[in-house]
Image 1 (cartoon, rainbow, N blue to C red):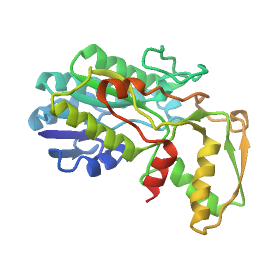
Image 2 (image 1 turned 180 degrees about the vertical axis):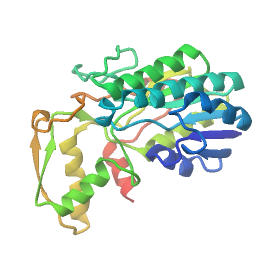
Image 3 (image 1 turned 90 degrees about the horizontal axis):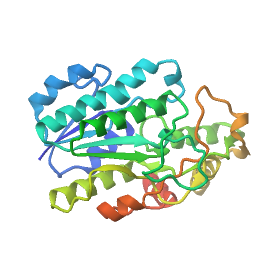
Length: 286
């Protein structure tokens, strides 16, 4: 099977390259070959390659910068996925697309399920929601996988930032009133492989939108504490951590206070079981 992965250098794309090995003929293309910022230019290379499965791991993820670059965010996160969905449908290929907890405003007091009405707080969330809506409107075979708080050993993310700052600073103040599930890119990649294998075996669940995040929950402060514990276990220096409210750490884009996602539908429909976030962190650091 010919599999196209869009987004060569991102955290999820790099994990997919590792965990999809041996599953098919893998084509991992970056911005030079497939630029989602120029959506109409995607059609010709897609038709030449003619993949049997498209996985879109490319996205505009600079949450704060998106407030100043809405047109670029919407081109990459909404218009690009629309063209991918149209070409996937034309080829008869399923599309797997990653989305985000930022499609919700965080005002709910319990974990969000797939039937909850989206209500993004900022440009990034609005652009990702528009991408979801565009894919659904095309009405081809698709899986939209909403996840949260993605980290890995690559790129820029909370894990790598904390590892560095905890060893450089005597004291760190970290937000403690935003709650979610840190999700390792490796978890996303292995879960994606499970979805593909079930589809190949004729055991696919229903196509549509699903939540895919690690089990359990914590705050950014709690995540930082877990990272600090791993550093201490290695005998490395570690800063003192202080919990603060979001109001003491203002950012250009508002963040949802509740990023918890209910993933029971994915387990029911596709038999994908997800690890606890603390175990996934240990696996990532190994």
